Amino acid sequence: MTRRSPQEKKALSYARDARNSYGQNDKASRKAIARRKRVNVRADRRREHVVLVQGFPDDIESELKRERLPSKRWRKFADAPLADVVTDKLRWRAAAGIIDEDQAEAKIAKMPRVGRRTPWK
Image (cartoon, rainbow, N blue to C red):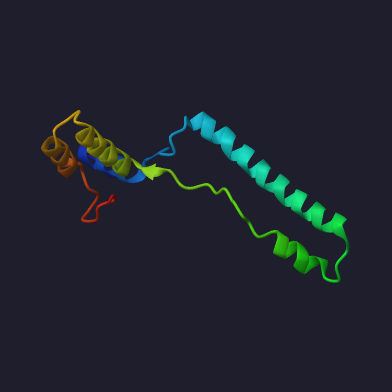
């Protein structure tokens, strides 16, 4: 097992770690995901019920598939890499006038990189 230097550990952390960038607390996100899934399934069941109650068309399967087309569908999306979150936060601070724009870009340039590939934009 090879030992990693602190610089390597930090570079790997920026590349591999992720942060919730949706704007919610992580606990709220966990609860909201289950709630949104329930709402979607409930809406699908309701649409199927309406199709069945309105009558029995010759081809129920095609009717149900046609009705199942999502109008508004919620989907999960992955958390943002830590490097992206830190970069965006520094740029936001510069735009808001909290820190100098040159200072923010200097900090972004100093962020450690993994190999030759940059893990962020």
